[in-house]
Image 1 (cartoon, rainbow, N blue to C red):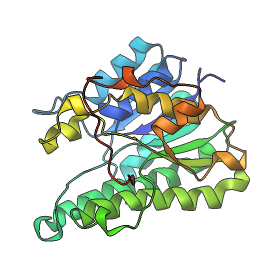
Image 2 (image 1 turned 180 degrees about the vertical axis):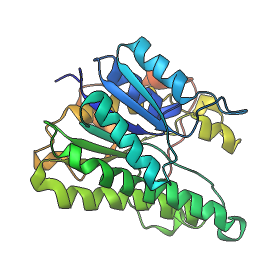
Image 3 (image 1 turned 90 degrees about the vertical axis):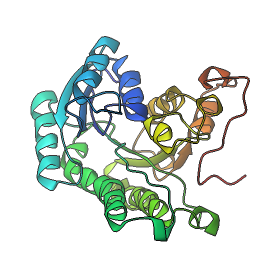
Image 4 (image 1 turned 180 degrees about the horizontal axis):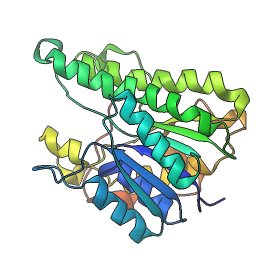
Length: 274
């Protein structure tokens, strides 16, 4: 299977992992909507919805840039409508939009708490809800959410409860969607990196060095492999995939090409036990 002429709706995606996934699918000739807030250049973050579409089309796909705030129901509905009018439907939804603020309870303002839960959990739920009508009509429909496996160990809460709640909320959406729509053949899965990925979010955190991270391409290649799978097979829904494990299943043994510096040790990502 390839993704030629498949319609893919990505929340966020003007940079980072979302853009990397978009470009990987674009190599097959996919039609991709980048639905994100960044319409004009940001003073500190690279990329806009327009530069993302340019990169998608350079890679071989067709792109649609839609300015959208994932917290706004009307804007999400309008972005879905624009996608359907432009590309004829929606085959795949990728819940990529995410907000991060790693701090303890006393250091997390409620506006940050609200932002993370509105973007991460509520945004993923709402995008899925608004896309379901069209996914149900697709030949091999998938919902892929960038969220971790759920591990209730206190270690994942003690330093950033608010962020963990929001990311686990996304993961619980995966569990619910997979269970509710398995009989309709809509696969719902989550994908999470084995190691830290050096994205704009990592740059903002400040104490993460790129040489201890991998590039976004490993997540993109894993997403590509997952989305090729038959959505109607029970084994292919309700999973919490780890990028490296997915690629091992695809026969890849050497991951050094994904490392920003193959000579330096990699940092394991959050929410993965040792």
